[in-house]
Image (cartoon, rainbow, N blue to C red; front, top):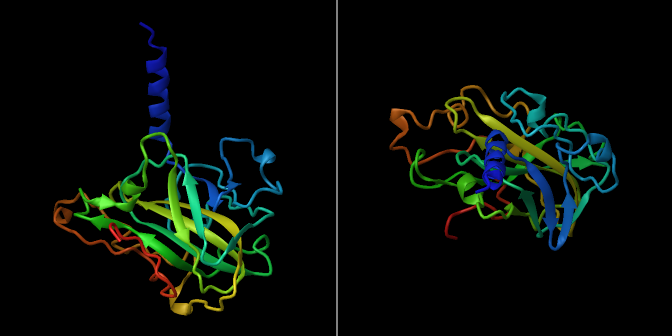
Length: 259
C-alpha cells in the first residue's frame, strides 16, 4: 500500500490549516478579473495592465484596529486598472478557500474622484453596501454567514454583492472585509480592495452618517469586535450587532438566510 496519496492529502490539510485565505479573483457576469496572488512573485503582477486589485502581501490577518492596513491590507499598493461594472450588476468575490467559521462579513465602497490609483485609502470615506453576520441560532453554535459561505467540495467560495442600482457613476474602491472572532478578544481582519469603474444613470450617494474611515471607525471597547463568544455568559446569546455604520439604505442589499 502506498502512503504517498495520504501524505499529500495531509500536507494539503496542514497547509490550509495554517493558511487563512484571501480574495483571489472577481467576476462580473461571465468575465473573470484576476486578483493578486501573494504566492506568486510580486514583480510579475505589480503594475500589470490586467491588475485591478490592491496588493496584499500575506494571507495573515490584520490584528490591530489602528493599523493602516485595515483599509486595503498591507501594503495596499494601487493597481493601474479598473473593473468595469454597471450600477445594478453583481460583483462576485472569489476565494479559493475560507477556513474560519465565525464572524461578520461586509462590503464597502469609496468614491475616488478623478483617480483611485492616486487615492490615499486611509483618507477615503467608505460606505457599507452589504453585511452579514449571525444568521440563526446562538453565537457559539449558530449559523454564521462565514460558515455558510464556505464550500468543502473543492469549488471556490463565492461572495456575490449587487452594486447599488441608483448609485451615481464614477471611480470607486470596493473593499471586502471578513472579521473572524473565533479567538477570544483577538479579532482578525481580512480586508482586500479593488478598483471599480461604475457606469449608470443614477445620482444617489449616501450621506455622512454612512461614512467610515480605516483606521478610525473601529474602537477598542467595541463588544462586537473584542468578544469571547465561548464565554459562559455568551452561551445563550442569539443576537450580534455588526460594527460600523449601517448599510446604506439606498437599496436592499443585506443578506438573510431564507429570503
